[in-house]
Amino acid sequence: MSVFTPLTHDQLTEVLAAHGLRLAQATPISEGIENSNYRIDAVDSAGRPLALVLTLFEQLEAEQLPWFCEALSQLAATGLPVPEPRAGRIVQCRGRPTVLVPRLPGTHLQWPDDAALEQIGAALARIHLSPLPASPCPAPPPQAQLQLLFLHHADALSADDQAQAASLMQRWQALDSPPVLCHGDLFRDNVLFDHGQLSGLLDFYNAGPGCPLYDLAITQNDWCRAADNQLAAERDAILLAGYTAVRPLSAEQLALLPLARTVAALRFWLSRLAQPHSAEGTLGQGHKDPQEFEQIYRQRLAALG
Ligand SMILES: Nc1ncnc2c1ncn2[C@@H]1O[C@H](COP(=O)(O)OP(=O)(O)O)[C@@H](O)[C@H]1O
Ligand SMILES: N[C@@H](CCOP(=O)(O)O)C(=O)O
Image 1 (cartoon, rainbow, N blue to C red):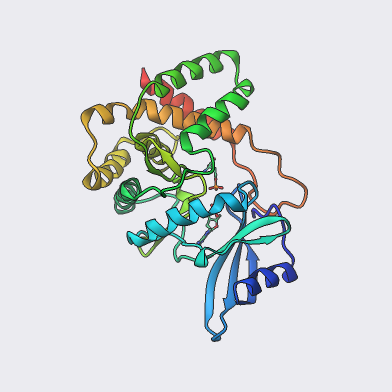
Image 2 (image 1 turned 90 degrees about the vertical axis):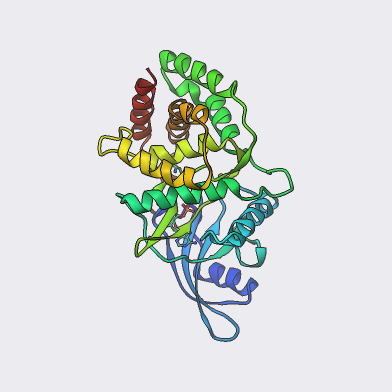
């Protein structure tokens, strides 16, 4: 499970008390590789049970979080099933900021069916149509993350791969598009489905203003794979149909998706190469395989022709 900063029962009790809640039970969550998460059962002052998730942020600082809380509130106001932090309260614990969010129902889909693909396409389009918080994004937004990863970690690639990737990055960065709210990491393990209905869009902490095609490409690379990780054309067509029914794309925009998918794959190859080795005491997943995204990058690159 991924808990990088373990919290004791007393520490969890204190965080819950700061929210006016009593801790009933806490279980470390096994998924995720960025923050520490606990599944929490709590009781409010009226004795009502609450199902929550506690996130302790390993990288983001407390002063960066209000932007993400505002984005989540605005998304929730549009009716999307996002975990809006409780009353925007940020509580420090072990020197790190934490938030409490409602625990949304459902499970992650390993092999989404057509209806799920259509729903995720439509949900992503609705995110892209949601308002951006008025204040500037306090953390690198999705495409700046790609640039920073390339700047600091491209030397982990072979000289040929570096040159190829640099030329793709140049082609991609030359393109311009008005920024929209992007999720930045809409993988299957950040989405919940309950009885066939989309029930949770999670982990907006890589979100920011950016190019919707790049965000769509991140989503396609994970959701529209065949068993060998090649892009599955039928799955892709269904996800795109869901997306464009809500937010139409021009023929010119659609033609840019193969390039977008290649740079999006490069981003996750680099971020997985850049992952710190799990520290002693880390519970759970903690790490994801860079070779998986190396393969996806090479496949998407080959498909570019
Ligand atoms: N609000 C929530 N409701 C239900 N499950 C959640 C919620 N938040 C997180 N989870 C579970 O915890 C896992 C890890 O959360 P995530 O935000 O992806 O961690 P990380 O910040 O490390 O990326 C998710 O894959 C999901 O299974
Ligand atoms: N989705 C990314 C990295 C972040 O993963 P998460 O499970 O912590 O959301 C990847 O697969 O590399």
